[in-house]
Each structure stands twice: as structure tokens, then as C-alpha cells.
Length: 159
Image 1 (cartoon, rainbow, N blue to C red):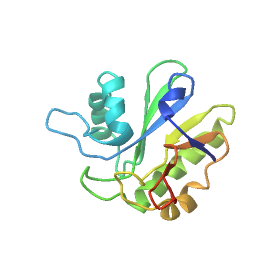
Image 2 (tube, rainbow, N blue to C red; image 1 turned 60 degrees about the vertical axis):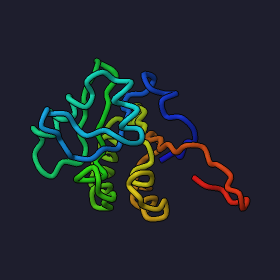
Image 3 (tube, rainbow, N blue to C red; image 1 turned 180 degrees about the vertical axis):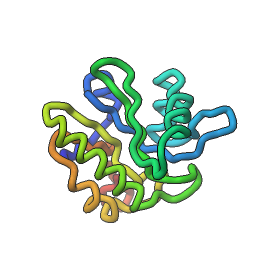
Image 4 (cartoon, one colour; image 1 turned 45 degrees about the vertical axis):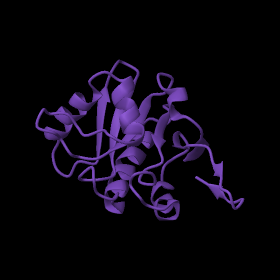
């Protein structure tokens, strides 16, 4: 795994698999709830992504952890589940399940580049120290993104 800092959208369209952390809440209209973080940005940038992921999740066998939407012959987007319900705190077991699937895929395709926003630490309310040991299994062709560090008033770094 390679840790990256900055805007993950900077590599959108230049990567083999763009992974977005999500939940598994599908609305009555069939759309996945994508209201916060990178998922909310994706809903704005990628037309009908909420409907496509909603459809894929409804048709996925349980448990759902990692769903891929192949948008073109070379570029795909994945929903990497960190929550069951959008209002929940992220769950370590979901992050681990998705990490195992992403690890297997990345090892199967070592020449491909995979990008994932750091799972569970934003709206998922988990600490980096809780999640890092789980995702450290990911090989070096997986790039895990965080926003740039910001300096707090007391001089400490904040992620």
C-alpha cells in the first residue's frame, strides 16, 4: 500500500480502479445514499453513479463488501463498503472484508493501479490507528488517499 496525500480526483480517469467508500443504504428510488465525503463528490461528478451502485448492491449476494462498476474497457469504479447504514459509524469488519477483496484483486492484477480514499476515518468516525493495521495488507499497487494535513492552532498536525 502506498499512502498518498491530496485530492484523489486528480487521478480519476488515469487509474484502473477508483474505489469510493460507501454504505449499503439503498433508497426507495433505487439509488445508493451517497451524501458525504468522496461519495457525495462522486455523485456530482459521475452521472447516475448512485443509481448504478444501488442496482449492483441490491443484486449482490450478502454480505456486500466490494462492488465494481465497469464503466469502460479500462476504467472502473468500486464501492468499498465501510457502513451498513449511512448514519452508522464505520465498521472494522466491513473495512476488513472489503480490504481482503481489494487485496486479492490487486495481487491478481499487479500491473494495474488501484486508488482508494482512506476508509472509515472521515464520516465513518474511526481513528487512523484503528484502520491502518487492517488496510496495511494491501499491496503497493493500491494507493490510499487522505486529504493534505492541516495545521491546528496548537501547532499539531490534523488529518
